[in-house]
Image (tube, rainbow, N blue to C red):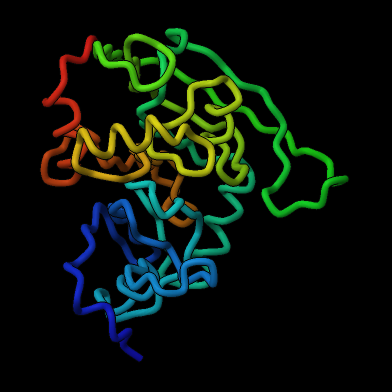
Length: 246
């Protein structure tokens, strides 16, 4: 059955595909699958990609609605099960790019347990670790809150565990929340950057996945380069429109 909303959107960009898996570039603002919390959203990867390929697709991992970048889907239930086991076994390396408030250290690790968002108050926190590296900094002589200048940085994040919203919550934990994060960020900064850029989004991008193919045993490295103008014009515009210090 064809999703009635699918023809309204352009085809999703396929980064790589074989008989078992397909990897796409997910645009910011798209849901991976339908949810009751966002029932009116028509940009649904699962339905749209199914119609685009003309065959069923199976989600293996998730990206938040606001996050752009590399998203892997399986083309059979067996392939989905095999790759889900790889994710659960921490056999998939993921790295992300984010624009954050303030200037963090050049490199740092966060080892901070997290409870699931919907867990009861007495539920135990789960182990969660993320490695971070600062890539570039920017300072603007504009006071957004109590400081006389506004500072942001581009950082690379490598989650070693797979807790929901882990990168967003770990960056909030160290007081460097992601710009555009309505749940874990700073409202005045989110609004100021949205007005300045003319674009309201979560500035978090899944840049790459590295994994061993469960069936061919080939080592796969698939990326959606944040500097690619065809894939990520918003990130390229962010970089070119300001005097970042790398």
